[in-house]
Amino acid sequence: MNNRIELVKGDITKMKVDAIVNAANNSLLGGGGVDGAIHAAAGPGLLEECRKLNGCETGKARITAGYGLSAKHVIHTVGPVWYGGHRDEPEKLASCYQTSLELAMQNKLRTIAFPGISTGAYRFPSDLAALIAVNETKRFLMKNKFPEKVTFVAFSEEQYQTYRKLLEQ
Ligand code: ADP
Image (tube, rainbow, N blue to C red; front, side, top):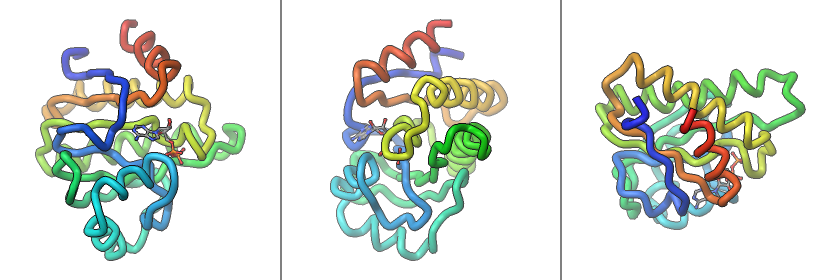
């Protein structure tokens, strides 16, 4: 199982994978954080394709091409804003991982990389977010052959250590 899950520290826009996952907002029209970095690296074609999607619900995901990125595709998922945990935030975040992995499977993608969805501007506690990311991914990989490999991309040393401890268990 764990040979299908990998952890790296760095910039997700540089990943050479079949799909990188974007922590998008409901408009899918770009924003700050990882979303801004992905759009900047992909170039204007990505925004053009995103405009045609007419947004995305929280907890759901959409797929586009990768344009100027090394990744072939971008899977845009909309994480929940953290309001304290009583607005179904954990379930919505779990749904982001499930729907993104389902899209990868449906498109027969072999490799996919995730940032810490909702753990920046959306303020989701990063320990709980990492636990949900790892649990949902393990659950999905147990049942499905695609994607073959999932990479978690930590953007800080702290985030890296949080994932490392969870993946060692
Ligand atoms: P959200 O609005 O879903 O919280 P953010 O983009 O604000 O999205 O943050 C999500 C996570 O992505 C944070 O953990 C942040 O540190 C991380 N992040 C920001 N830029 C990058 C990048 N270039 N590569 C990987 N992770 C990134």
